[in-house]
Image 1 (cartoon, one colour):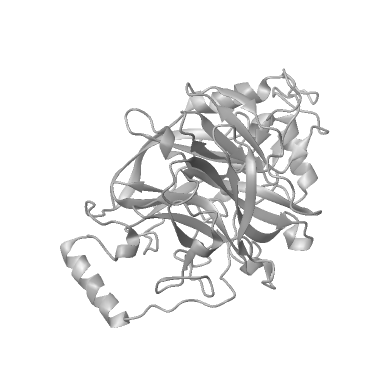
Image 2 (cartoon, rainbow, N blue to C red):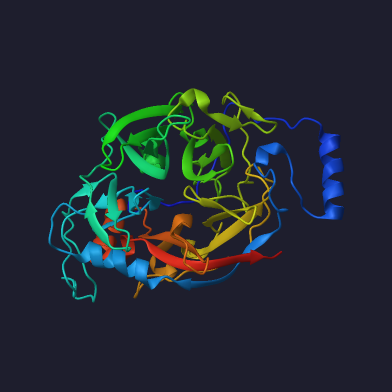
Length: 428
């Protein structure tokens, strides 16, 4: 996302909201569950044979300095002019050979200069003419050292005035049942906009296929086209996060608009049989009563005010419970992260929990314009003691994108991911 993009977005899908069937039965089941504790709900929650679901919360967290400092080391390395020096939209996928592919949305390339900057501040900095691309990817070796940037942009613009932002990615069979593996990357396609859409009009969700082990781009398929929806604030894009179940990949997404009218977006979810992410016909979308072909979709979380998600959020499974991380609604300067939990991807989602404010770069603060957003869990990179790795993006917010870009050029740490190690445990 662009250096100045705000992340409080949201809308309802224009094609209508699904209606739950059997309301009396649902209420009866809710009453029973309230008396005996939370156990397995419908088969759609993909919990067959698992332990009962229970509330989960963040019980402790600490900064993960090794990962944060590795991105700073790599970004500051001036040995090349065509590699990553900063970006946001940070997602990762562990490859079968142990490497990790990191994916970014808007990205600065070029070189970084040692501090002090030319404004007399004690920060590493880049020229304001540094190359800027809409997406990039960097490879980390098995030891956790970033080694190279793939040719950028990795995903070419689909048309003049349009671009692609990579979001979640996963390794899956080339086709259902195949022994050959590929990387599927979810993409958000956007187009140049004006007025409230200065950061782009949401157009579609696509899936790109990368070969293994060479990570060559093979194809891109459009799975959900929203370009015909008249109001851009009503368009739903999928792929902010994926979670594997026993039979399906659950793909979460949300609205990407209404920033002027509500502080949060609504969360949506689709599911796809394993090995078929690149098959548009295999996608099914939650419509409030079941999994349909997308004629009607229903949000699973969000009231447009205190409950909801940012445009970038993340979901993990933890001991049978679904846990969602997002920027907290209404937080001053977007400085706080929070969580929700559920027993099924379709909810009901409980929360938000009490927020927590992760560290900002040195010499920055929310009141100065620094924002925290897009918390992304990286479950494949858990610590040996089981603590989860959670990354988050940092940016400078300003109504004028050029002003924001000036700040992130003067202090390169304002546009690089930072990381936490946190522990989830039973809680209210």
